[in-house]
Length: 446
Image 1 (cartoon, rainbow, N blue to C red):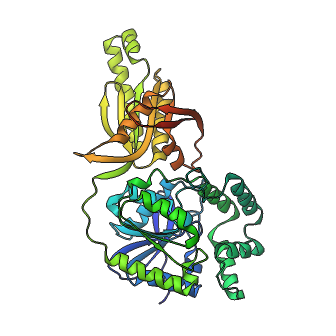
Image 2: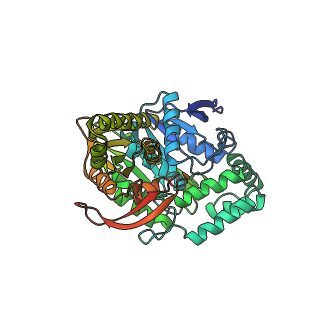
Image 3: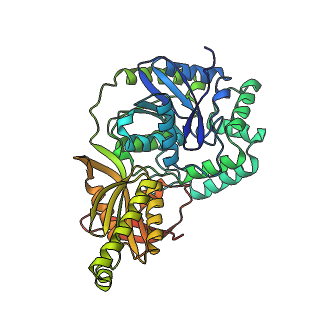
């Protein structure tokens, strides 16, 4: 087939390049891992075979993520939250209400977080060698260590763009890839056109810091998890924590590119066809991933006594106006207001942190100090509002904050990797009525 036309969706001020092809019954968004370039995709027959195989069973949306390929370059490293906005912008521009997502390796965190946050817009996940944590942890021994990551980032900073570096990367990523000059020439050009050296360092650092392990139980859409034999451990870790996950080993596949191995390609396409054919209509989800914010004014009783009823009511009204204005600016939803406190939700932790920090700073101009707490987790939808243990944890985190402090759970901190937020560790805490110990962090003031 001829190369599909390139379209652009606007996500805020950023243009996201994408293509649409195929006429299958399911909408499918093909999300590349870190790199991506729409034009050079169509210069590689093996990759074309892969995407056309997807197009046999779906209508495919293939995009260059912001900062890569034909999409706008950006100065700041985009967070997972920003990338979710980009996915929604592309889906809206293509008039897609709900889609399945196909990706692999370091591309995993984006559709995983999207599926948990927007289950009503997610049909299914199809993941190859999914990665839950970018850096090795006691319960996740398969990822690179911090020292290994530092060496890799230094190498990228020094050598990205050089042919010898990309040739080594190709041997590492896909030992079975063709060694003919034509294929290697394509790989080198594809990598160069995907990312600039600075963008490569930033995005690989983001991959290092990413951690969606706490989000996995909130993913309830059907999920097909394909994996190499060497990646059985992390694939099983992922599948054990995701409801409705189906695990399939691609025996014999050595590298990350299923499309360069005939047997792996055929098995991948067969499993994809069977999986897509089995997707049925789902009920609207009654649970969703959300970031919960609680705030309250420090010393409000004494303040009210000092000012008197009339002056306190006026000051409280000004406080409420500031909070509601900032909730609107950062796309937060006010769920409840009790006395001098607010309970709100956000569909992304970055916006929630930015909003809480802005509230803290703005109300100081009114002579007030607040404390705030944030937690991200799965919430129940109850009569249009959110409830469940996540809400309780958010309230307990807020109760533990010092005056003028925005306190967050480790889940929130992990999900905003690469966002530029700075945190100060506050140690492990027991939260009243919540099992276990929780590591908390304060958002740096200013």
